[in-house]
Length: 204
Image 1 (cartoon, rainbow, N blue to C red):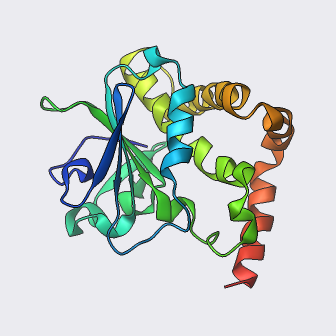
Image 2 (cartoon, one colour):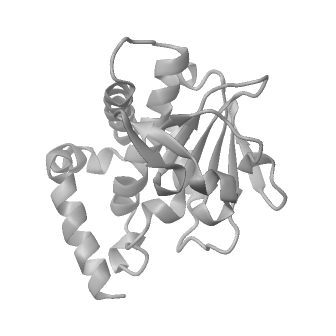
């Protein structure tokens, strides 16, 4: 998803923790929500796999939760494939550079892990990759489309295509032992996700 930054940017909120990765700052900002595992090392590993030229102009990646959103942003909507979508329902958002601010990405950890927190398989690195990689790399795909490789096509389709490319790079560099497994499982990802989500629901 793509949107413009708002005044309540989470990266500058009180209580946020940040660390610089290359030229991109990785920021965590949670309120009441507590992730079931530390997502920072995972996202750092993913960012490390991205060719630096694709991150040029991207200021930060913010790991957050929907309970940090202001009332105004909870009502705000963005567009996905020409359809309106509330920001509070998004798993990730790309914010274009605006009014002197650099571009940045929000990753809503609670939305990504919704219904998955109590499953034992969430401790497995391949499952964590399965959940977070498509979201992060899709949003970086929006950044590439907006700033480096503009195309006159549906922006979600372009971001999807870049996301798949960046996932392939990630698995080749950081997870070579599951690269083939990931390539095999990609067509079955929706079905696998439904099965695992149903299993998680039974353990609630």
